[in-house]
Image (cartoon, rainbow, N blue to C red; front, side):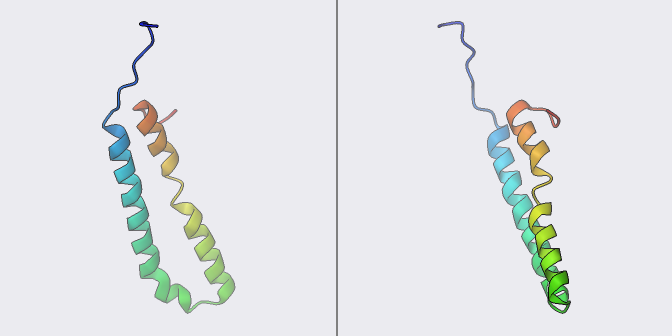
Length: 75
């Protein structure tokens, strides 16, 4: 049992959590800034915008989560 590798915590996980929160905050500010213009558009355009905006912030998370786990940006 002494030969098992020890998983030591790294600084990448807290840094990654901070980056995720920063991405969410920046994205929310961007979307909120555009809300006045989007609100003047027809409801189907608004719905499409908010669906896309609600999904788009997730895209940078995959490489970030990979980096948090492995230290590399690509798995």
